[in-house]
Amino acid sequence: MHDARPRGAGAPRPVTILFLCTGNSARSILAEALTNHLAASGGRFRAFSAGSHPKGEVHPLALAVLREARVPAEGLRSKSWDEFAGAGAPPVDFVITVCDQAAAEVCPHWPGRPVAAHWGVPDPAAVTGSNDRKRLAFREALTVLTRRIERLGSLPVESLSRESLEEQLRRIGHQ
Image (cartoon, rainbow, N blue to C red; front, side):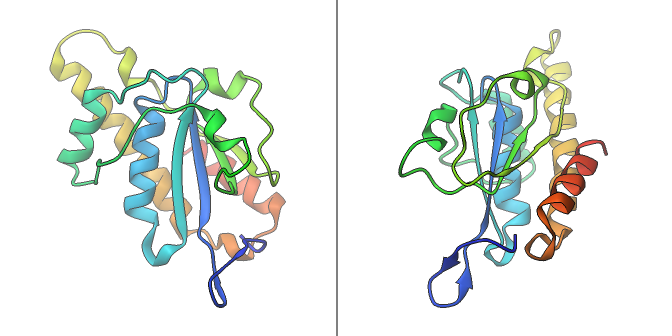
């Protein structure tokens, strides 16, 4: 993003992304881990996740499919979006909701007026039935998010206007 604050001597700080979901146990966790794994090359991106009503634990199948995909899952935790709205919170450039419920909620005021977008993904934690069916739902969510985060990683975010970024992020969320 062209207005990213400097980091060190002349190097821009990474573009920070906050992925939101109500429970912060599955989809937003997957998005955080994937972004930090796939799109963080060269230090361009840093992702976090949070929830409006965090479950307090990461869904075990979210961790399992991340490990199967060889995406680091250490340190992931379910947390409140309040951690990112107060003083001392890391600056946030993009806020991306990944569940329809979180997209409809009144969010806290995010310092710095981040670019917002919605990338709806079906909730794999809501799937019922066999363990195989549940695991498949998590893999499908991982696949959708991987495709979107790869597209995000290819954007020249540092040179796009705010309006262009909003449009590109919305477009990615519909793919």
